[in-house]
Length: 298
Image (cartoon, rainbow, N blue to C red):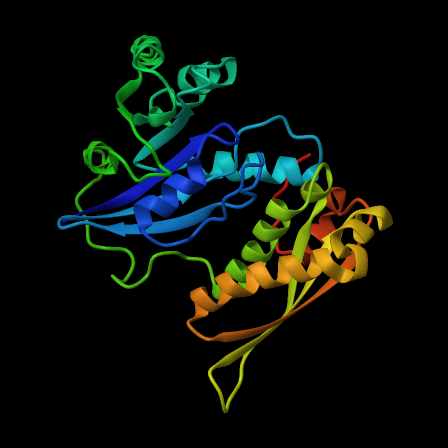
């Protein structure tokens, strides 16, 4: 039996969260077309016939512009520590960019790295071959596996490649456990995902979610969930609520459907919109919203 940790890293919008969800077979990370969607390290557990692979999904690599950004980049650095291997997700359509090259030559030096060349179905064979040829120049890359995370294509060869890096050892998590995150955490992420999807322009980047109440009724299989959708400006609050409360209602309806699938129960969801100015630069407010910033370095 083998078991170990594999970090999933890459640029924003490369498809990391889509990949971990496809590998695990459950929704453990929210997905959005917007960059910088993932803000925390998230574990996803995959069991095969002879191994348990614990994947660590990390935020997209970017230049931090506030304390939340610094927190996200420290999550990447932390995710790379003491792992047995790394899957670097690269968007085939965008090719090998300067940031990818920096990671593969500097950050990944001395590590077991497999490149998952994502969105292979969206490019021509010529483009795919060109990117593969470029990646072959990086001596530290152990393998390159073209995949489509969205369609779940070619994931078995990817698992086989990272399985080579795992040491012998017993399972670290029970067979029925697929993530280390609580349902309370997942509820906040699902609400944020729907806000990211439905809201436009700059508003989503300043959105945070705080769960005030997450309770299962004693007499009925019903969850009562109350949450604050936090934004940074009064003008953003008006956008989140929408005319006659229409936008907030759409976010709530979309989130409730996913929450009922997550919990297997009926959900009564109540959302409030709060303004917390510049919360992304406040240690106190970030902690209040669930970001563990105690080790955040300036």
